[in-house]
Image 1: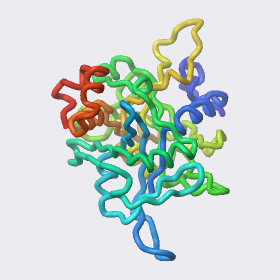
Image 2 (image 1 turned 45 degrees about the vertical axis):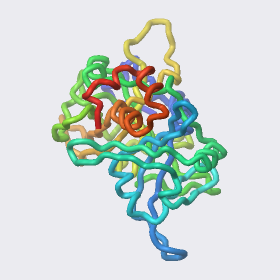
Image 3 (image 1 turned 120 degrees about the horizontal axis):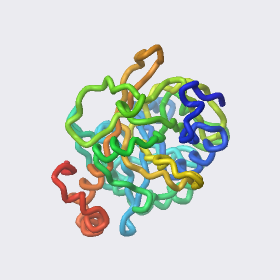
Length: 310
């Protein structure tokens, strides 16, 4: 893939290089699932919405982090299909497990499901994994802006998430970019946000790759359906001479909740994506799951800060 001219000489643009893309996919795909909300029976069954989720585990309990608005829509669905290796596995939403969410547009958009053991086992049996605490990074907006690192957004946009051959599941799409308003990136056109979130700058000419590891096109798709997917801090900055970047540097820092329409800035077609930092999700889990509260606060004492309260 030929990089845009302003990225050709960026030493930390390794995330966009052909040899790196399959590594990122192999790292993030096992932790990420596609969600399809369904109503109707038989031939009349049809989707009413789509989303994504990120699989995590604490103290032997398994959770799916997602956007609050995805869980709000799920409450009105008759079935939720989780697309994993052997096709779509359909569940009545209550059978997935205990769902908790907070959604108020422009205020908070977070949610999780503590998955029922049988559901978690089905997911694990189909080549998916639950990320442990070492894969998560709880940081506030100011710290992320100060680091000005690259970010990788991964999920299942409806526009490109068509069912793959042989019922192998939907295609994960990831795109690598930077924080809006940092360095040469323009400031976001999304409105102000009252909670801990960051906006990503997504120029539409940066390549989009699928689970096949092949370039699907050099235009970023609409993000509808990617809500609930992860935003991962890449760990490529600061550059350390002589130390190669490793895919295990990727850490989950946020969950995608929305995006802007395409706009043209400085002659470049661009979108912005809003990512709610996972401190909100983990604090909600701690508040609603006494069995893991102590472990979460011990691991991330910052969760005691009122700024993370739902």
